[in-house]
Length: 267
Ligand SMILES: [Zn+2]
View 1: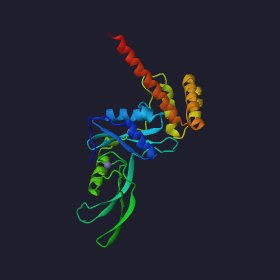
View 2: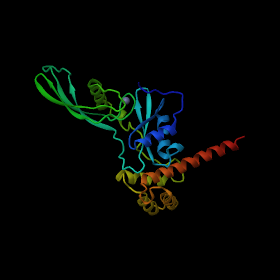
View 3: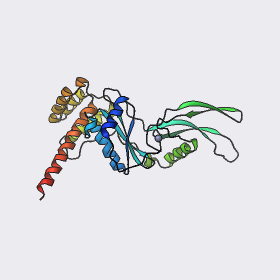
């Protein structure tokens, strides 16, 4: 079955618990009709805007293109040295395409999305698979997707050609890794500073973030991160990413509070 957008709201508490049962394993949150909606949900999971996924940074989430919309997949990463989920994978596939003067099979190495085309879930890891054709032994890659959707080599070749022909359509296809300050937020500059540091070093810690923020005159943000790290279960090993996500969370809440105040004043 291929998941589709539906009118019911996702049961975030149930999904969060399911993620906790197998830390690091991705769980489907839901499929959304628009990419923007899916990205907003993925952000809400990462920043802890949705209560079920608190504290901020305990869960990671990505929005991925799927057959009937954009799917959000979440995983529990608290206390794990979880690497960002890969966007692409390289596989060897048989190409039966007949060329003038040559008929038969060649094995080509291609780059494809690391996500299932049907549901946006993670594709399985490729393993060498030997096959015999016209008395010749050849090696291709085979993989099984945990979601159960099967990839045919023909579809994979088609996808790979499409990626080569339309590189811009596939660039940044997987939304999730990027960390950005909330526009107009008190901590927007601080979040962007930490995000740049994380690009260079994904293990950049909250402790280092405090120093970086102080060096750049973001003293209030530095103090907030220090308090957050002290109150957090991870303590001194709190990651820079959690710290940045916490600041995003504060700015998001402040903005929501502002919006409700404004609405209250408009009579
Ligand atoms: Zn799938």
